[in-house]
Every structure is written in structure tokens, then in C-alpha cells.
Image (cartoon, rainbow, N blue to C red; front, side, top):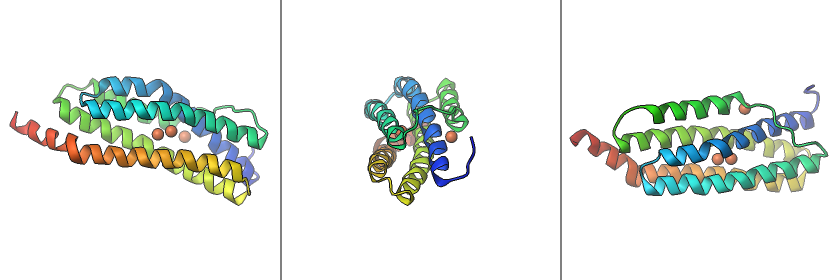
Length: 167
Ligand code: FE
Ligand code: FE
Ligand code: FE
């Protein structure tokens, strides 16, 4: 695919994001199952539902651009998911493993925040107002998820993980 215009770059980014979101729809149920903390599990499950909506939004953005919603395999997301899955395989204290799960999940969210930030900015430059709105909605959800994970770590998971040393 030729990168000769900002629109072609936007389409490239959207294909990568579509692949990333579709991989997450498959991976998040396993991550949720791997969580010991009930609030952490609930947060991951809630984000799974948001993620399904994010796939729909991306498909709408492809429609606005008059392109078929074709994903292009995101190797980075594959690797981030793989790293998270490896952490879940390790032996250890449940609270420390939850802290590890949060770290892995936040890497995923930061990748998405970066991708959607770029896509939104490109859509702005191209004057695609409806696409900007859709991309911004998802970007806000990713940022909110990242913040929720930080709060969960600070309020609950990290203190429990700290106590693991005493167990
Ligand atoms: Fe997402
Ligand atoms: Fe990617
Ligand atoms: Fe996300």
C-alpha cells in the first residue's frame, strides 16, 4: 500500500487499529479470567464490551472514507498480548500477578492511545468531522480505561501485592 497522502496514512493506521481491536476482543476474556481481584476482572470485562463497540466505530470510519474495513495484522498488539499471557503463566502471589496484569493491560492501552491520537489528528487535518468524533470517543475510552487501571493499582492491587512479602 502506497503512503502518498495523509489519507493513505490514515487508512494504514485504521487497518492496524482494527487488527489490534479484533485481537483484543479475543484476548480480553482470557485476561479477565486471569485476574484474581474482582474489581480488576470487572474492569477488564467492561473494557471488553467497549472494545466491541470500538470495532464498530472503526468500521464506520472506514465507511466515511469509502474503504472496505480490512484489518492489517498488528504485530505490536500480538506481542503485547503474548507478553501478558506469559505473565499469567508464571507461578506467584495472586496480588502480584494482578499487578503484572495491570502493567500488561496498560501497555495495551498506551499503544491504542498512541494509534487513536494519530488517527484523530490525521482525520482533523483532512476535515473528516464525523470520523474525528468517532475516533475521539474511542480515544477517550482508552484514556479512561488507562486511568481506571492506575486507580485500581493504587487503591487496591499494589497494597495487596506489597503485603505479599509478609505472607
Ligand atoms: Fe481499544
Ligand atoms: Fe500496530
Ligand atoms: Fe483499550
